[in-house]
Structures are given as structure tokens and as C-alpha cells.
Amino acid sequence: MPQITIYTDGSSLGNPGAGGYGVVLISGPHRKELSQGFRLTTNNRMELMAACVALEALKFDGSDVTLYSDSKYVVDAVTKGWVFGWEKKMFSGKKNPDLWMRFLRAYRRHRVRFVWVKGHAETVENNRCDQLAVAAANGAGLLEDTGYQPE
Image 1 (cartoon, one colour):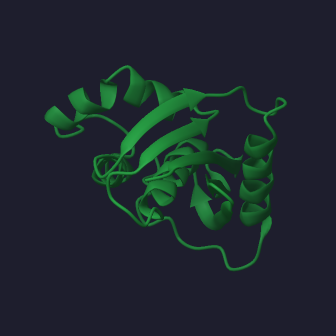
Image 2: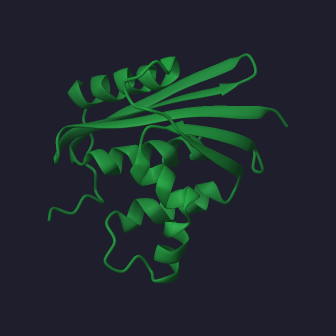
């Protein structure tokens, strides 16, 4: 099975505010871009939503994936194992449990390695994800983020 490279980014115009995610999936010669905007959400939700959507878009279970993100929130939660502890405690007191549960379902279908990249730096594909996310947040047809809970 081919190696799959994923870049993700999320953005919100205000926090909370309108937001969007952008995803670039690369497998051999194949490339796919995904994005969507939401009326009211947060930056962290969009960063996590991007990872969920990206992993759910993969056609074959057991894929070898390298996922690049500029979100310490997402990358550290996985690489430092925090999300697995949160899961054992049923996400008690944690934000975004709906997306973390969704993420774990998709994450467990594959072999995923996370790599943190500096945002707005020279990572071409991460910058493309940011463009997709911002355009989606500014676009027409914004969806409702049904899991967003105002504080």
C-alpha cells in the first residue's frame, strides 16, 4: 500500500467565529484537496476537524499515513498520548469530545505518524491548507458546526 501524506489546517475568523478547514492529501501521483466552512466555531475545532476529515477520506484501512499539522493542540494530544487518557475518562472536562471521538475512530483505522510544522512558514502544502481554510471560512454556504458549545 502506498505511503499517504496529509497536510491539514484550520482557521477561524474570530475565536469563536466563522471558521474553516483545509486538507491536502497526496498519494503517489494523486492529489486531493478538501475544505469546508462553518458559521460559528473555534480554531481548535477546525484544526481537529481537518484531521478527522482527512483520515476519513482515505479509501483503504491500514494505510501508512504521515499527517502534517501546525496545530500543537492536535499533534501534542496524539504524540504525547493525552487523548488516550482523556478517552479513558470519557473526555470529562475536555473540550471538543465529539471531534476527539470522531478522530479516534478514523485514526485507529490507519498507521498514522504526526509531524508538527510551523504555521505560515515555508511549508508549501501547509500554506495551501491555510488558504483553503480561510477561503472556506469566508465563503458562501457555511455549515453549522453542530458540536460547537459556547462557553
